Length: 315
Image (cartoon, rainbow, N blue to C red):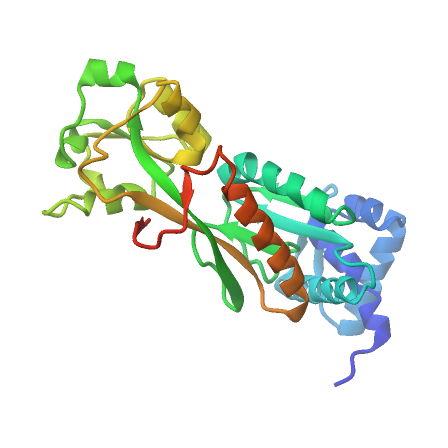
């Protein structure tokens, strides 16, 4: 079935409303008046014979299921079209590259990556979003995602690196509560964790004991939300945490934090994957990113925090 061009012309405005959450902000983003964007939506709804946007009190709006479905599909198509247009541009690596990463990786590793990208592809504009929230890459506006898991259907995943992790505590905490001498001994201490859901790193660490140990058996746990909060909590003497070495390497070097039990378990690691929608157009950018990441991980500050040795226990 041919799609009428007069329908397609309305879709960017629907996508803007879905993205901005209001007619006012969507009008500003698309450089039209609020009346004009309201007219676009009325026309689209009349032509389709369905309600797409629910107008609520004040300036609040909510998309119907039909509106959400149409906006998400348009965004996915728009992203693929943009990548095609950029790929056929005679000047290599133009346009905008949008990447989403976890907060810790985005804050400490990505600035080095962006600096290197700026040297190799000066005409490429980078938009980085650092968030621990998992999202559907296919329907989002991001081109690439970096995550600790292979998440998403229909995506291509490339292992970037393996991040080493350590079990750490502050010297003051260990002096006050004693140093754990075995994995079961950890249950007598306060274990710091990201959230209330089952903690994968802690549980897989405890699973290395000869007899099953459940994380929930710990005498006390404390939820601190994210990697940086956990690191500061450990430094403040709140308890013991499992943290990536690229975050805590300076603290270990200056002895603000102390690794414990490192001789009692197989090294802890997390694999980081570069994920993207499978398209021919993403291949040159993926290759560029892989080249840049490889050079960054070889820098002195990251040399002892990342590895590509697959023999390690992937957590």
